[in-house]
Figure 1 (cartoon, rainbow, N blue to C red):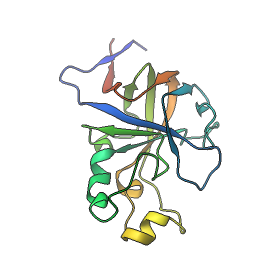
Figure 2: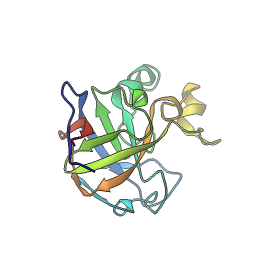
Figure 3: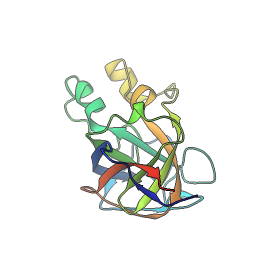
Length: 157
């Protein structure tokens, strides 16, 4: 296989926030940076581990509509690890490789079933993660922080 490079005319976005939680089933909290590790995901996050949903990403644009009903929604409220802006994440096919900060991620799943007890779904009537969020595995580790660029990658031969 070749090297991963930014695709010509690649879709690009920015990291708005990075978030973690110490336990599952709670909102995540914004932090200054996260460390992504191959085979694990977000170091110290409750959802880390050797599975196909190591790192979750959600576009901030998907949260904008819900902020009209709940203006105080903040990063991590949908249990996302990385909140982005400027990239239609749900349009990326499974298998797409994206660079985020120093790390490379491979898309493994688009959306997910909402938790039965999802507080936001109860309050607003819908949740952004089931239709707009994506899940990835880490294929190259590294630090990710707000302001980092997000790029769709391709393999050069």
